[in-house]
Length: 190
Image (tube, rainbow, N blue to C red; front, side, top):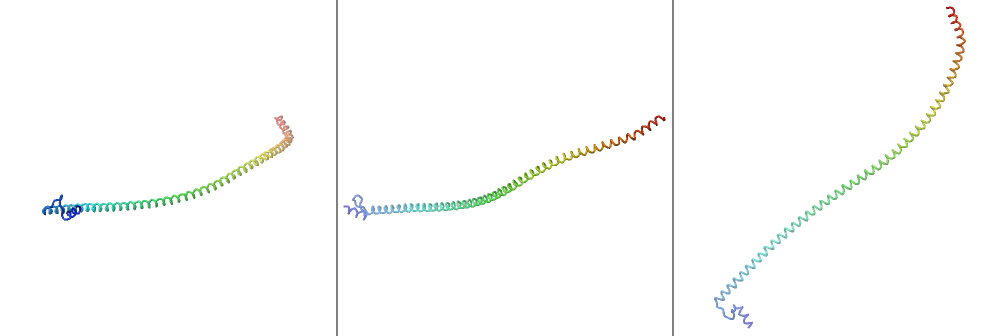
């Protein structure tokens, strides 16, 4: 029976074992064709939708890839720019460090030179003070010596003056007696 059913279906087949009329067969064939056409249109519509969706997906994928490439390019440019800026800053800092180290070295050298000059100035000052103190002692000694000499000279001069005064006094007294006598004569004569 199964074989019969298969043969019947191929040949247009019976519906529930009944024979179909030509009009029914034609109607059934039209329905089958219509159904196949609807199915074909549906398949074509689904295919068209799928193709449209595929095109949209491809377009979106293309846009995303382009955007990704743009972002990669921007990231690359930003990274390159940041790297350049970093290198420039590093070079500037290196230059500043070198300059500051040179400045420090110069200042240290200058400080050592100034310190040496200061020590030399202190030594000279101490030497000048020592020389002045020595000179002051020498001058003080010389002044004391001169004062002693002057005292001796005054003593000698005083001694000589005393002698002269005494001599002059003795001469004066000798001369004074005749003068006194003369004065007395004058007084008497008057």
